[in-house]
Length: 216
Image 1 (cartoon, rainbow, N blue to C red):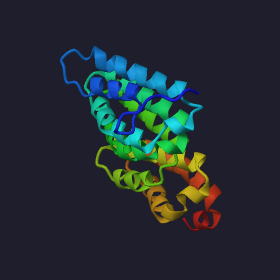
Image 2: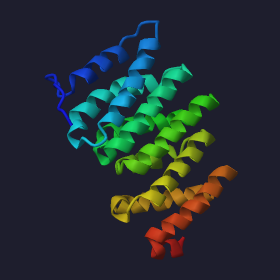
Image 3: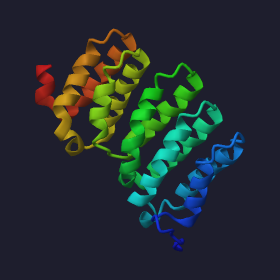
Image 4: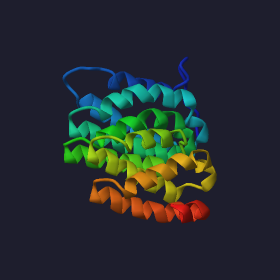
């Protein structure tokens, strides 16, 4: 695949142009929406070009995309989440720098009273956790699983289940104690939904650590 010119900041010129649109706070938000659509298309077009997905790229994308996903317009949140899913599916573990910075925001937005926005961020977080093994997200999920908002807690238990069902044990071994504690908390959560998710998480936990599971 042909190489694209890079600016001094380490990002392709076309990405720099999209970032400029994303950080423009004009009342006309349609250029931002289109920039997000173009960003998603860029990720899909470069899915076979590993060199395109650099740490510089993801560091540059982090703050603008956090800003977009917090937008009150569901159309902006939808396009942001679609772009994030495309990057995760295309870049896999190379997306770790961006995923680590974004996941706490996505998880907290799971407690949004806006059901439409909730569905977008919930789906995006699941796709990211499935395709990008960002181990440092585990302590974030552990901490947010104590949130007073039941929707946030329920989402955290769902995200942990996604991790347990999709990651190799080696990616989680460092945090096994924390994961075990979250599963235990979920089994006794006040929310019936959380308890049901924790029960399925326990089954997945047992697949990785049968001896520990036997003591729970």
